[in-house]
Image (cartoon, rainbow, N blue to C red):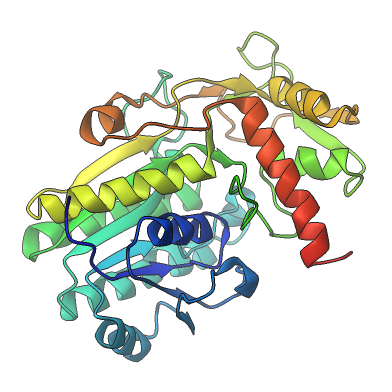
Length: 334
């Protein structure tokens, strides 16, 4: 077991970042957060975790944090994540996801921070010809979101060859659910994640759920995706950090998914079962660039890390998302 070094989590007040903060804290790692709170929430940060409200482009602030907290690793979640918005406003994505990542990596190298974990995405693969998709599949992003993340992966690779610095890029599939203890969850208003949207509809917070495309080459005609529980994803980050600390000369790139897919209708049926309600489904046309099926080949992460998912069950993911939605109503009454 490696020594537990201080970790800076960027975007630690956001959805996935806040779960990583909990996972680190629960495992005994010293942790601090930087977040500009544009899409994050102060309430998502546990008591006792230092929050620096600011931007990852602020070199002076980063230098101060690295020094004050003795930071030896960065977990980088800060960024923009809405695919259609990236198509409409590509420069926002190249700024927030690529240019700001470059500034963060630069600050880390200057401060002698040797370990970096990056929140990447299956969008780097674009529309894969084969599903499940392996890490060695062609990287052909079809939108600025995927490209902005791939560009950061390329930067990390180059930096790791030039400096005493190793990294892990974790390519997420469809992240869903919430902390099983309802300490944090997906809190963004107007979120686009299917399970979040469906749970909101079941609770009357939305009138209906749009089903985009019914003519995909899948068993029921709707798109199939690999849904991973956010807490299992967070635990993968902690294990990846341990691996980087244990082998400083090695970097890693791994898919994060369960290797199983569910269609849009499967998900809506699961929400209906858990909530004992029937969601109004509106069938609509396909969105540009949506693959028929996107499922991870997760053999590499399972072979590399002692990662044992605890919540690889669609019903459990929905239950935890639902519990968080109730909690969110208490935290933020409509």
